[in-house]
Structure formats: C-alpha cells, structure tokens
Length: 328
Image 1 (cartoon, one colour):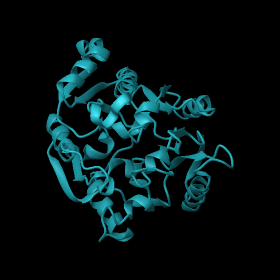
Image 2: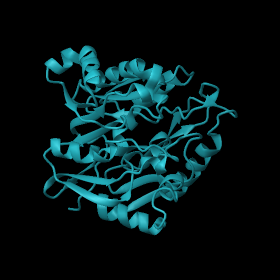
Image 3: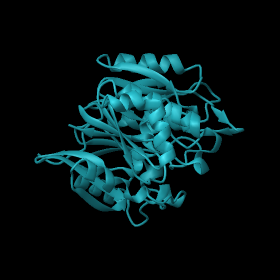
Image 4: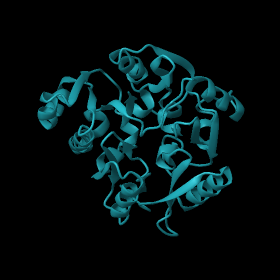
C-alpha cells in the first residue's frame, strides 16, 4: 500500500481550523468573521472534535465566549499558536493514510506566490503535526492544500493557473509537478483544469472550482447567467473534465457577487465535508437554497448546513479554506 491522501469524506479523527485573531487584518470584519467561524465550528462538532487555533489572548477570550459550552463538553479544544492568518487548508499539513498508519506532509508555503508573508504561517504544519503526535515529512516545493482536491483513489484535480504559476515553483513543469504529487501524496492521476475564479488571490485554487463528491465523480459549477464573471472558466472546466472521462455533477454558481464595488470569488464549492455534516457557504445569493439541495442529494448520510460566509470571504476564502481534516 502506498501512502496516499484520502478523500475528504473518509472518517475524520478531528477537524483543525483557526479563529480570526488579528484586528489589523480583519478590521471591522473581525467580530462578524469570528461569529461565522464559530457557527461553522458548532456544526462540525456535531460529529467530531474540532481543534481550534487561537493566535492571542484576546482571540482566545472571544472564542471562549462564543464556544465555551462546546469547549467545556470536550467537543472543541483551543490551541494557542501565533499563526499569521486562518487559512489552514494551505498552511497546515496534508494528512495521508500509509501502511504504518496516519502520516503528515508539510510543503513550502510562500504566501500564495509572495502576496502575503505573515509571521507564523510557515510553522503551522509542524505545530499541528506535533499536536497530533505525528512526524512531519517536509517537502521543499510549494503546494497549498486548496490547490488540489482528491477522490481517495489516487486521482487529483488542480488548475494550471496555480500549480504551473511561476510564482510557485518556477523551475517545475507539468511533468515534474505530477511526479512530485505521486511521490509525496500518492496521487498518480491528475485532471488539469485551466483558470480559477476571477480575482482569487490564490491564483486559481481548485477548491473554489471543482470538488470530488465520490470516486471519479466531480462537482462543477454552472454559470448563473451570461453576466456570471466565471462563465468561461466554468465552461472550460466542464469541457476538460468530460474529456478526462469523469462522472460530472452540476452545482449552481452564486454569479456576480460584489464587495466594495469589486467582484469577489464567492463560491458554493468551498464547502467542507465533515463526519456528520457538510457545511456550505452562502452569500445571500439566489443560488443559496439550490446549493444546499444539490449537496443534500450527494451526501444523504450527512446533514447539509448552509451558513453565511460573507465576512470570512473578505479575507479571501471560506469554510474549506480554513479547515483541514485529520483522518482516523
């Protein structure tokens, strides 16, 4: 058996996430974003323990206020660590199943191509692996967890915009990236999509665009209309996935979502699959109810919970971006 990254729907021992902690980063959105994260934590904790990182004493106090009963019950555990920001999907370790049990892999993190260099982010993977009692296999190339999605059989989906971007690994071509994914995560087949969502500072993370919902079964958005800013991106993704031979399932797009006069990369695809629930981000769009219904049909053994994520989105992501599953 090769060490391999399992699918997200594989049973979890816990979910790792982080609590918005820095007023200078979140400004007026700090308290509302904390509320949204707390609501997500409560939903996930219905079926597994949630390990919640807090960066400072004020954040710990706020988390205790919002989640004190869950902490007292042992459903949520607080960990003090001076991380840069909450995007644990990208800064945390990627967990694998290996012949010897669980394993953890850590990759070089360069702030999404040098855009955001925040003290503490480069140590998150080692901190979490240490708290899990696992050695961290360190790999010297840049890879963020949100750049790939897997179905547990060795199949991954990613985007050329991100993994072939010269701001990540400028000396690596497609063949070399695939070789490293095979060596480090046990991923031996890769579906390459093209561009990611408009104005996504991650340079096209795939967890906003395409998600596996079963072995060989890929969920893709359908444009909300001709004015959907990602219409061409979605259509290209559908064409590439069809050519690859996957079973495809449709998910509604929220369409054009604006904040402060700017189109933002709002996506229902940034859902998180926990043991008992699937948490899907909502934005007050016409597609909200249909997104929840679509996922309910795909995960009949889990409760699908739609939660607002507008304030988390001001930081650049949503529920999947801030979570990392620790498999059993």
